[in-house]
Image (cartoon, rainbow, N blue to C red; front, top):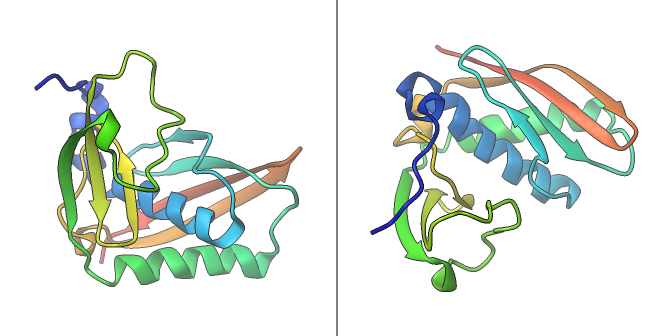
Length: 155
């Protein structure tokens, strides 16, 4: 089975919690604001950032709600599973818009319980209980782009 390999950074298990929470954050943004998944992300072990295209700046209450919803999903202790499928049999709702042109015919699909399903080649935790607490450390909105900067706090 031909499958693309992730960059070395995304094979490092120390980044798995942050990478997994990025998926949860993306799905939360889609559900709360009807926007697309992040158009730009910079994922690191200690802190990360994601950019979303929004027509208006969210309120402080909405920012707090994003954090609360992400933590609510994490607290459900959902399994994180991997499956493989051909491009022509991708599960309903999986956006392939950011898939590189040279991506393999066989795709790796990551599921976070029944909350999120996404094509991804990175490393993830096996259960959301391994993530910790999601904390938005700052946010900015400029010219239609919301940038969220966040970290994980391990209990």
